[in-house]
Image (cartoon, rainbow, N blue to C red):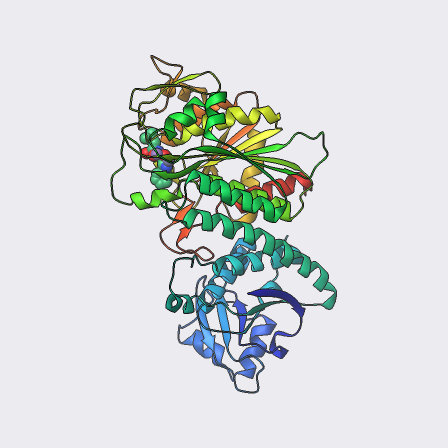
Length: 503
Ligand code: BES
Ligand code: MN
Ligand code: ZN
């Protein structure tokens, strides 16, 4: 689907389908009144009959007379005017485009960017519309036959309307930004959606290499032998139950001054999490192919940062392993010596994410980063507590946490902070080692972060638990079923705020 911007009257532009937004109960917009007149009161009749009221999620198809330049009109409800913001715009665009997939349309014209939003400029409106549209049309089609592919056919072109010709330069720029970001989000989704039989740690490393080639950044893969030599005991402990060799993927985008400390991103890369000897229940175990979503987000973020040429130095680290039960797997009660030298009593082999992250957090200190952010599908407790609507954030630096929350609000990937008080440290203290890898049932998301805290000591650090947001079993306005690619737009919004602070 090719995107472009045009400055034209929505009722004078040729289209297979024209997308128009309508506020809830607000048919006073000049555009809609004009349309209503042209169509002899068709909109007012639909409102009176209760068919359409402009509520979020409502859609109405209109068929204007043959002399009208658009073949059909898709009216999209965008909710109350005083609640309309960039996220509502993104969702409205997503719903509209989602409804047009499989309809074999050639040119779709979208007038949604013409709706005003206080405190948001044209570029932001265009970017949000483009993001919502592109992300809603994402499909994971690699394993589908021709016939099913027909149902996923996208419109050939999408034109976003602006008011004045002098807006076009800015709009083109915003479309190009959104296209790059969505390319990276789609890659993250693809990596998550790929089945477990395909995605070994080595495969993930190959995908990272391909992304690095595409974005022209660096990728180094540290193999098992080197991990053994250097003493990545916690990571190797998790990996030893699988026949697939683990690795550590290192990505570097060096867009800043040579002497500037990098921002470090760490992403959990468990390519499949069966739980190990502490085996998971069979129900929904298939979803555990998504347990590398943190790693996918890091690969996606590096790709986007590189494609957008962000003027910062960025390091990404992904510990990649598979967690399976076998005769060589770690047992509950085993004690591992981590890369940091700290010893860990493994009480539950299903709490494997924190083990590999512990070594990755230790490793990343070699780069003397200005701050570290890790992303991980870490705890079921987080799925229960936050549901699908927010990721959890915890950290040892409140200003970093606050900036991340703000970035999340600006891009629609919301974060909710949980406390990381020292009181929780007790729950992960072991009687036979320095730490134990479970803190019991209470506050599971917090004690997982409390476990990570000592490994991040000495650096500004935030931990984001994306267990509830990385995967969807129902589609959302601009996400399909499956991997969401969560984290890419969040981290990017944060990194952009670092390289050009707005406030
Ligand atoms: N990958 C899982 C967490 C998870 C569960 C993510 C469901 C998404 C959906 C993680 O490795 C795990 O198994 N965590 C355990 C830890 C527990 C044994 C301390 C959990 O949360 O149950
Ligand atoms: Mn697990
Ligand atoms: Zn896991």
